[in-house]
Image (spheres, rainbow, N blue to C red):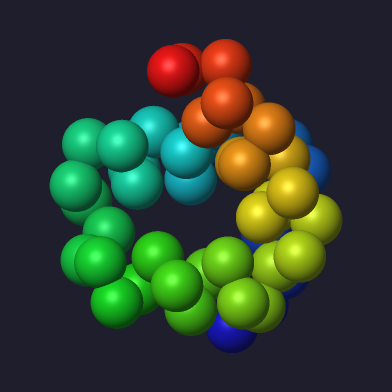
Length: 48
């Protein structure tokens, strides 16, 4: 998988949160994009 550009982080976050990306696809995205993974986890803390 190609790296996710920083300007698309919010788009991918929205697709994950709305179920547009299958569960197994989420892990592949996280594994292939450590910068996105860190950003996403920080944002997740804010949601809870």
